[in-house]
Length: 84
Image (tube, rainbow, N blue to C red; front, side, top):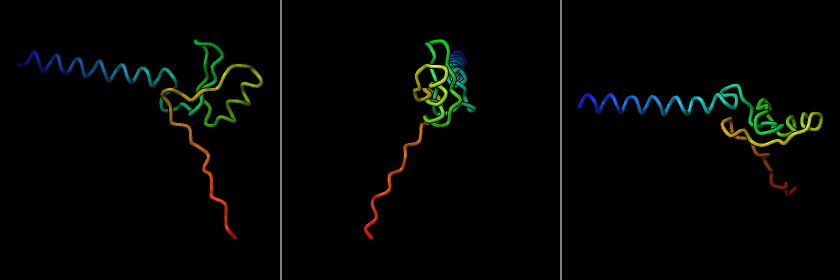
């Protein structure tokens, strides 16, 4: 029974370490919602808005995409037309 508990704890620790590593790979808690990808190995995930990312991409090139492990990009809120 002890062996089963130890094995379960080792598996749980390995799983949590793997998810933490993925989070820090793309910037972790300090990351923005958008990443600028210059190539598959060069990226900057420090953009809070798509507009910031596109402004940087216009100067240095690359593609903007949502950060796979960062905060979700906020959608623009549309307000219904006012019926005055």
